[in-house]
Image (cartoon, rainbow, N blue to C red; front, side, top):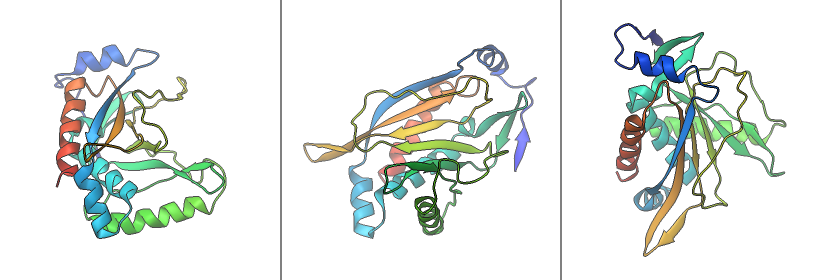
Length: 209
């Protein structure tokens, strides 16, 4: 479900119109997140740490309204729920684009996500399903081999895209604390630095539960 945003009363109307004219309206921020508590919790429960922090990412995304804004045919819509297309690696080191629906209940999310990971690992190619019309997504990737300090993304400027892109890097440990780099790329017509800050704060709180 989605609702069209009334641009005439939106306090970011001029911001949206300004940045939407850019050839590249996306900008990105990279910051470090503390994953000590989340990693311990995942291991204690015997669940995938990847699925656990993917779930926490989606939970934070769905809490911040600006992260649920999407541009469809030049108009801005607010989606009730945002899901995820994550890159899933196979044994032959290729990857495929997945589709994982967000469920507030972790057990349900975990079950469905495990099924989708298995499906991707038993298929070939990049596009394993039809993504047309799927605007209420974030694009998600994990690069666990690199403790990166910045990330850029391959993009086609001819393709209308307003989905946030979130990436995680290698987990490292210093003085008993585990951390990972997190990169967030968003459309500046929809999301400002303030909103990325809210997202980062919300995500960290969820990781520390």
